[in-house]
Image (cartoon, rainbow, N blue to C red):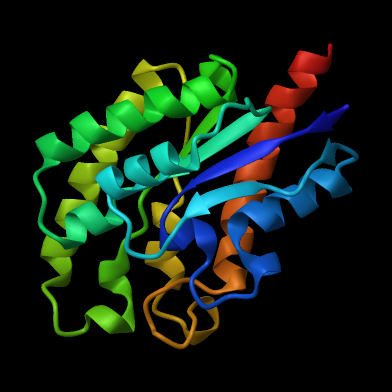
Length: 204
């Protein structure tokens, strides 16, 4: 069978300033194919700068009615960047997660939530209060993880990788903010391993 994949998010999902093949959804599909799984090219609903409500509006406009073998959701950095409240994020993220589960055929086990990267470690943020950014990201990620696990979805932490790597030029694109394909490859490997496990269980 051929598996299908829907990726929902913002700049980190679309892959700001990287070639299409280097964004993490496409790298994930390539890895799954190398593992012997037949996976169609991902359907991506993501744009740089989107907040939770903007992603929700775009999903409504897209008017998708199909279901997918698995769905990823990575959203919230722009909520944090704009100083929106954590309560607002929790409410809107919960709604998005419900929508993602619906897209996954009402199977929460086929929804994979990625944590929010810490943009505060990047050269772009050199004039910002990095500790305050980290604290805000941690608060958002705690809510993200709690909600994802409560809904029975998978939660994949990639924040640790961004904090380790995104002070290094090779892990960033020219804007000194967004990840390069090298960083996305780390996320894709973590994601692909979890997705493969879930899909292979379904095959048994």
